[in-house]
Every structure is written in C-alpha cells, then in structure tokens.
Length: 307
Image (cartoon, rainbow, N blue to C red):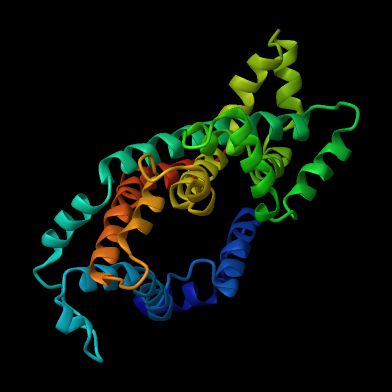
C-alpha cells in the first residue's frame, strides 16, 4: 500500500510556480548574485578598525606625551602608556594662558558662526534650488567662483576694514566675516534641488502658504540632515580656526586656538605643556561628537521627506 502511494507521488508532476512566486524568487536570486544580502566580513571590520586606530592615535599620542616625564619624551621610542604628570601640566596650562576666557570666546564664536551659516545657507540654497528669478544661474556661478579665491588674499584688506571700524581685538571681527560661506550655499543648493519635489511646493502654495511658511514647513524638514552635517563641519572649522583670530584678536581676549600659541616661547618649546593644551582644546569637540553623533546619524538615516 505504501509502495504504491510512493510511486504515485513520484509520478505526479511538480506544481508549476505561480507568476507571483517567480517574480518574488527573481529579486532574491539577483540579490544573492550581487551580494546585497552579504554581511560585512572580517576584511571590512579589519579595515574599519585600522582606520579607527589610525584616527585616534594622534590624540592618544598627545595625551601620552603630555603626561610623561622629560626623560621619557627624549627617548628614541616614545612610551605607549600615559604617565602621571597630566594634571600637573593642566595646572601649568591654566596658569600660563587665560584658558577659561579663551574657551568661552571659542564657544561664543563657533556657536554664532554655526547658527548663522546654517540659517543663511539654507535660505540661499532653497532660493537657488526652487525659486525662479532673473540671474539665478549667474549668481550661483559667482558664488561657486568665490570658492576658488584663497582666503589669504583677503586678509590684509579685511584687517584694514576691521581696524577702520575699530573692531580689532573684538570677537565681532572674527564672527562678522564668516556669517555665511559660499560652500554652505552650494552644499545646501545641491542637496535641496533634488530632495524637495516641485509638486510639494505647489501643494503648499495651493493650501495658502506664503513664501516663508513654505520654507519653514517644507524646506526645513527636508533639509535637516544636510543642516546637521553643515552645522557640524562649520562648528569644527570655526573652533579650529587659527590664522584670522591670531591677526585680529589680542592676547587678553583670544580664542582657544590662538591662546595655545602662547604656550611656546621663541627658544624653547615644552611639548608636554603644548600637547596637554591641545588635548584640553580637543575635549569639547569630542563631547560634541558624543552627544550630537547619534542625532546626526539618525537624521541622515531618517530621510528628507516623509510621506
């Protein structure tokens, strides 16, 4: 009985796959062929680990040298583990330069510049991307062309202008020239030109929204990932800026980067003190990355326009 049943089951033809099954199996086969479902392997994690270690090593080396003794720094092979003089060197840094004043100035300058650049760049980028007005293409070409001019060419006339206004030694001389950047306008324009559909803007206008309301309710939610990236890079550039604050500010009212230059003399450089100050100046950026990194990544992965 069972043998007859087995022979009948073997003799029956296999069921023909339906079109839905064939259509579902084809993408799966293509995904396996192209390796989309393949998880990162040992090589990928090895490369990422090497990049991470290579990026973190300069900061670690600065911390090690800043906490080591002079005899250890003079050896052919620098130590790999930190010493016990870091807090002593921190005290010397605080006694040598106006660290807290410089830190507050850097926070003020970087925050104002970041908010201003993100705001004006988003406004200008939206105008160049979605608004139609006479001369928009020529103005955009002019904005991009200014990126090819070296910053050093404008330092002398800009310094003369700040001295004429009486702003030398003031934080406004550092903030005003960088309230908007050509790179920020170009970056936001390139992002918004494709991410915002024209139909969405037309729908907002049909609903009675004016220009500013359309920008606030349509463009700003779509531009949040790009605004986060631009804000992070702008804050880093303003925080690490050295040349222009060094020229226009005084030693009594410096930013953090210019204050660190006071840690070295003309004839002798104590690298432990200098590198300790560099580590202290880097800690606020690390804190910013720790608190803002998760929101930055989630904003990028969230996408621009929600349905």
